[in-house]
Amino acid sequence: MTTRSARRRALHRIGVLALSSLSGAAVGLVGSATHQSLPPVGIALALVTTALLLSGLRAWGDDRGPAVAGAFGLGSVALALATPGAGGSVLIPGNPLGYGWTLGIMLIALVVLAWPRIQRTHRRPAGSIEPTAPDQKDPSAP
Image (cartoon, rainbow, N blue to C red; front, top):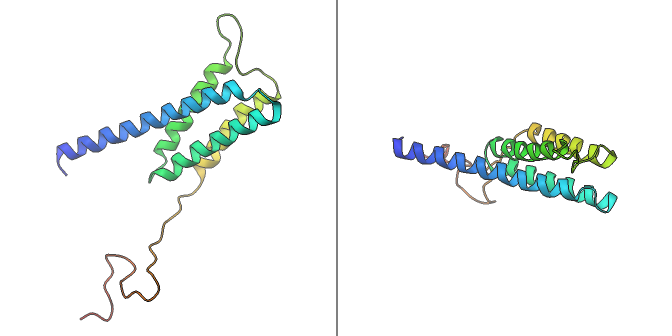
């Protein structure tokens, strides 16, 4: 592996993690602002959006890195908005919906990040004489 390709891979990885964290922060900001609206609907949509983002990031790559970065961005914004500001106001109040939002974020992140990796198997088409994997040899070949 050359230094140039290693550098490109590292920059790509940093970019993916940064974009994952920013997308998590955006979902955290929108979810924190809307989870109190239309009481059962607002929090349900915010939590479903959170689950879709984190599960999509988890399924996207071969590792958990993007999902961890997204969960970190989402949780960081929610934590910042639950902390009283200079005037003493908070965007995530200490009521059942606020607790549901903050605990829901943690529970969704825990489930998505702890979910085992699903192995994708290569299946050959019916009637095919190709081996199932590129490194396997055909037993009938000389």
